[in-house]
Image (cartoon, rainbow, N blue to C red; front, side, top):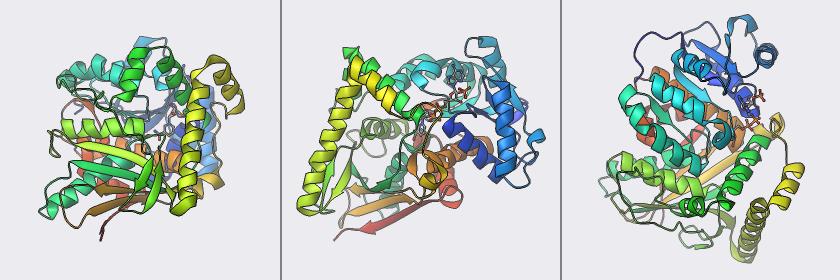
Length: 415
Ligand SMILES: NC(=O)c1ccc[n+]([C@@H]2O[C@H](COP(=O)([O-])OP(=O)(O)OC[C@H]3O[C@@H](n4cnc5c(N)ncnc54)[C@H](OP(=O)(O)O)[C@@H]3O)[C@@H](O)[C@H]2O)c1
């Protein structure tokens, strides 16, 4: 936890980006400026940041651009990042691809005792950051929390909520939980494609990174020597829900984050806890056909992303950094994810996490803002170190997701 006087409670780094500007708009709407929350926006270009403050003025009634402090820093200037980290209690970063641009700021936050959260889903980079900064963050008290967007907040918190519900009912924890993305409408931004393509490019060049990506245990704390565990691909028939399933693009990160949450919480769900994830493609013959289509499409995309010439073609065809789904698309998006307790209680429990906003941007902007506000305002007592959202701030974060971010959590019994 941050100690000592700081100018700000929260600084948003990367405010000019597609997702960063949505976070800025959300903070302007919910917190205003000059109120209880002392916040600022930051980036590499002051002029662009000032343009953003004027856009916020036109978007948010009553918002006064002159009251929002604007801070400039450069990734090439370590002293400017140290000053940025030292100016605030919580640093929220939307600057990605994180594997390319993220590390200097995480180091500055760990060294400066500044709480930090981001939107990365890049396994290889999280692994590198844990190895580099966990010990420093433990010493300084900085809580470093990756994956505070759609990957992995609804999944991490959904499994935690399911396990907590089992405990409240006096049932043992479920040693295996299966996440099934039942409904989803949304699209990717240029920044997300850039991060995905960069992660595949790095993995294609490194057998070590490919092994790490395929190992569901690769984000367990380094002190725990765990055997490699293959994550299930998710193709098949989900008998309890009666639907066919296909691989879900975010399963590679979510499955690892859930194992890490369990380990950091002290293994409340058992040492052998497994989380598996897939997406529903529907019922019957058409559901089965769609499962093969989705799996084939995902495989073809990953194959194209792995080879230089086809990767360059994808970079030309896909949205560029800074672009993303428009407001209408963001507001008409939605998601609904089931988490099935495969062991532990009879009848089986299913927790559902849902929202009526597009997952990657409108909902993500709210989720990461609420993670940062939770660290800044809720007296979270977790010690310094590298955390996951659920292991760091489960209870107060759940309250915020329910009351402010528009997420719905519910539970039902399967016959
Ligand atoms: N987990 C999730 O659910 C989720 C959801 C959304 C996004 N994301 C991730 O969030 C990241 C951002 O996505 P996006 O679509 O918002 O990207 P974007 O629109 O391209 O924005 C990137 C931001 O990074 C800044 N930036 C780039 N290079 C920089 C550098 N060298 N120094 C300082 N700042 C730099 C840009 O500043 P300028 O404006 O000055 O160029 C911009 O503010 C990506 O990694 C994406 O994968 C994750």
